[in-house]
Image (cartoon, rainbow, N blue to C red):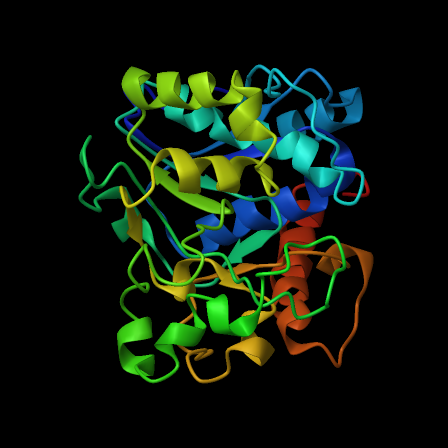
Length: 297
């Protein structure tokens, strides 16, 4: 299946293997359920298994192959092997046939319409892309995380005293460690921006310092040139506990199930955020069963 003719604005997500396919299918379904008027496109790499292609085709989900991106100099991400795939999430900057691309991670569900991101003002100088901040609290005390990833250096901590503002905008880009989260990127594709990304990936002196792959690169190359979005557009699952002063269930538009386990790996009725995911996924399975589509994903 292809995109509608003359598509200019599109949601995209990266798929490199079937491990994240249940999440992707729930994400695509959730976008339709909230009434988004924009199409969804899967960006897949050559590593995607045949059963992944079959699942997308059975559901009529448009897909397009992209090159698997890696920096020129190998960096060891043995502690977080997912980061090897993450570089390819920078490819939307190169999709210049579109005016606007909003890249979403496949471990997300959209719970409220957020089509306004397709019309968010961007430019080629100081508003090159939009994203929410990364949470740098390191709540699980991962030993391999940078030592400065502590709550006092987290941009969300700086919003605890202004929770109403946090519902509409992110902290300034230079707040805390000034790192965006790469899970949601609002992009006006351009050759100039993509060339800067490619140049950085070809420079070992830069990529050797990028502990978090794509989001480290974006935060460095476009420092102070991105738009900080409210947490509600990329509501990291950990924020609900770690940043209770700003989190409001009724304001959240898009939940991001970072880290492990993923919802599709564990059904825990005591985990309310996971139940949000399962409610949507159960609806998806029911609709697919009615359409005689069920393949285990």
